[in-house]
Image (cartoon, rainbow, N blue to C red; front, side, top):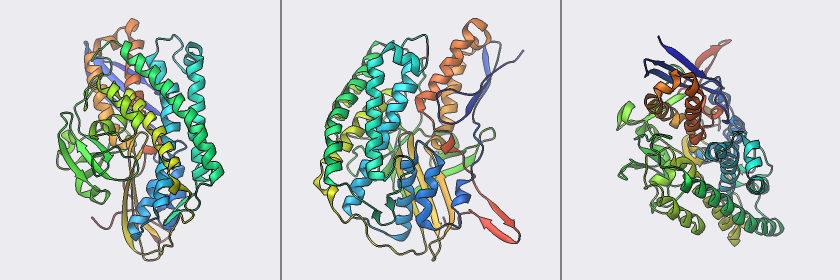
Length: 466
């Protein structure tokens, strides 16, 4: 007799997701990981809008990843129009993006991941606060610092407004810079406390390869020209779990390198690498991927923690358990990068933007969001109107790999789902794996193509060029 177990909803995630598991006779028959958030049609909402509005419209996709959508949208428009922004604008955007990593990674590690890492009875944020109130307080302070940097550079806290085609609408004045630098010294102390606590937990955890299970996939992330850690610019590097570089390409080659298809049971698209095919080409993105693909970490404090990370996990590693420790290294790196940006005197330059003129063109852009690569592309006509848009969020890249990771784990623990006394722990194991990826489920649901006629007027987001 087939036993069906459904975890609905998955907890401590952004958005709504579920996992359906079918087992029979101690063996796994089927498993489906589904994003249950309905299609939200942001590509359609962008169609027939002014291109300069894309950064403000697209960031409404998410209340967590809005900075990253804001930045990748403006980069895609600038790519279509051939715009080169002033150096200070790039510096401000890099610092803004890194600040968004502070808030997101602190939120995930302290309040979503720690209940899975600390042996506590009350497996939630309240249990963490009860078990270690000082750590919880430190995390809140660090999260607030990231928010203050985002507010100062982005113009406001939620759904920032300062990145426009051609640059930034404002810079950072001396008083604000001094205050953020002073608070940043405290933030650096706080991030070390959090990182040390998490590294200590990893040192104590049993080296059990069945806890999260490994998954052999290619890894994709941005790198600098010399292979350094990168969040805002650079090229996409693809590396396998053996450390072999498979590909390296710019955003403009997205459609040459990646293929898109759909899922039968989830409101997501699925991406895979054309050269490797629809099975071997399923990749992973995010903290583990970024740490796997780089040659070096250029931020000094983060580089020290990367060395500590390499004592626990080889680099690259396929072990999903490494996701949260990689995220910890990145949290330190994001504070390092924010301080580096604020310490650069050029950040106070007054000329933060260049004049731009709308024209026809197709633009492509990647940035790294906390959960992984984020891609936008726009086709724009000669009047500056978006005629087609495509948005690919990190969880879209990761979706099928998450499902495969869950399937591998469930195959190894299938018998536990059939027994009432072990079922709860087995279900918890499934949720731990999903949470390790920190998926942003609302970001991942977009239509693939719309081609319709309303009252005689045609609407389409179909790409016209390859």
